[in-house]
Figure 1 (cartoon, helix red, strand yellow):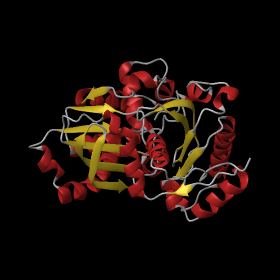
Figure 2 (cartoon, one colour):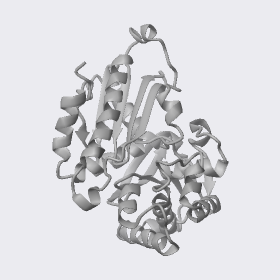
Figure 3 (spheres, one colour):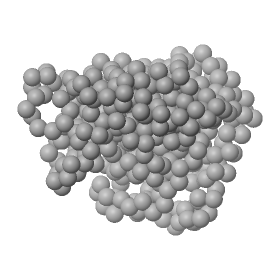
Figure 4 (cartoon, helix red, strand yellow):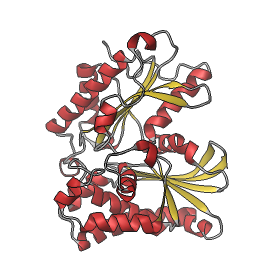
Length: 358
């Protein structure tokens, strides 16, 4: 999801802001926290009675937890502090919203860092939150779960990808019906917008550097494609593609010419391959400050959007598709649905796995 331009709306509680007195005594309240390489995100919701949920609060902040990780192998002190400050806000909101079921996860940056476990212990000590360090397989599955509602059952196959800060997850699915799919194969590439920006730069990107990022990602995807015969399958069976990440939502916002990020207009929108290429070319050609001035980019993502475009270009070059569906949803939505399903089955799920001590 795009946090840069959406921050003001999310952090101000643009989702329904029920009074606290009303919030109490109205059944379960679910929360998902996703601490990634670049962002810290919170989503709070109630079940809607129809297998979905209604968002009551959301928060997002770019923390760049993985900054410098590719060079040092550890999470830096400044990065840890930024993440801790954002997580403290999340913990406060859990209390304010009377959350009953919460799951908090950490992904690629914490998995890779030599001091990742120590950082999670610090999070618990300083914020009261207990974060799970999930593996790449579960990360990919949660992203798929969060996007199921956007799958068109008329297509037998689907590709769902999530371009993250420290990694990119790609899942090839068999579509079994409305809101039903089975993961046929998946891959987690150790390439994301932060790792590529650290390695190649993101402020002033030459055509040669951009091409190098695209080629690096294509090479990383080639073995996965060959092993599972995805390209060959696509030659005979139509395949739908869904992208969930700040990169694709940013491109969608720029494509639509939005003056302010609007999730309702972006989530579920279709972009043609020509649209994607046109927007990427515009962003690549822009000077850094011009990218900063783009309402759906902003300063915090201006150096990351070009590496993200490179990953996206590699994906659609590997599996050409006439159009892509943009998802402003993913891990957090997958977590929330999992919590609700666990409660409906009579299980406990992870009702207090990330509850603050307050």
